[in-house]
Length: 141
Image 1: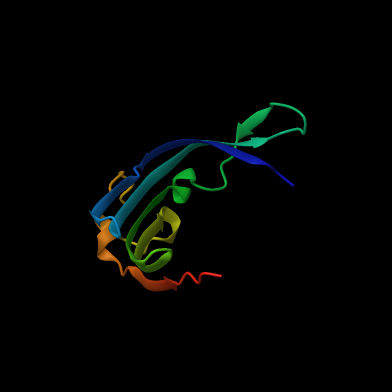
Image 2 (image 1 turned 45 degrees about the vertical axis):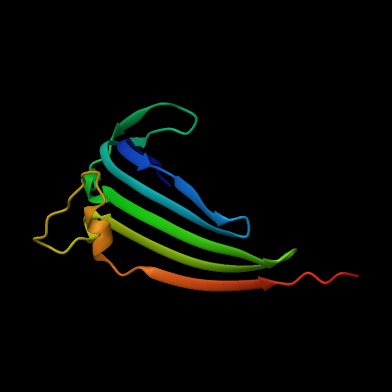
């Protein structure tokens, strides 16, 4: 069994945006967005010579850049809340999520791997959309 170590240069960008719009005391709209981007580049791949030591030597069986990666994801949520009578509420939720993962070794031959941080390619894929509804009714006992 061998243990392989390498250095990673990773860049990450993450933001959470949230806003509430109040139409009245009984109606509101909550909007939430969270984009996440990260890219990683591997260098200086080394193998551990002896257990319980820090003795490492270069590991030359593969190219460390084959494992460079790029990941991007974004989640959107919109929640409409309507309290149609005291204690009874109607919720309507729309959720959209997108993600994109690329790894250099899985790219087709001849294509160029873009390992720059950016989400431009994220909006070119198919989103996952969900719509949910919930109704609560308060019964006085």
